[in-house]
Amino acid sequence: MIDTQHIESALALCEYANASAAFLFSDRAADPLERKIVAILKTSTITATGLNKALSKHVPRDKLQTALGSLEAAGRIRVEKQASGGRPTSYISLREVSIHGQNP
Image (cartoon, rainbow, N blue to C red; front, top):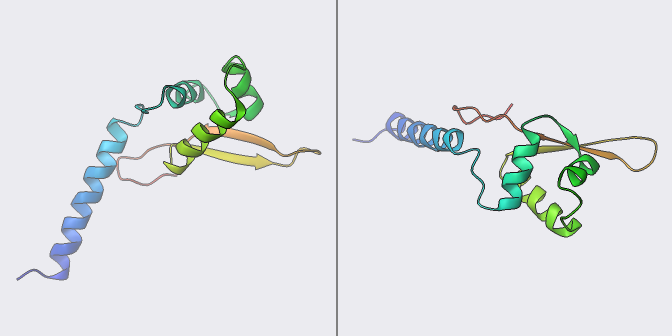
């Protein structure tokens, strides 16, 4: 007979497999722009303006926003806004991926 503990064990195994795949393939984004962004963020946290400069200002704003939104929704990056006296400054950083499926 299948009990709750069996279901919970199976769920834990699935979560571990998903987290392992995310850990192993975390550097592999399908979109070339997303791959560039991840490569830039591996060096350090950067502002949105700094990211635009690092991409040589060749990426249209809407395309950059779409790529950042996709990476953020996937849990790959973190975007934090900080007050700066005028418009808030956006700081973008990579999220650490844990093999146990928990992002810090």
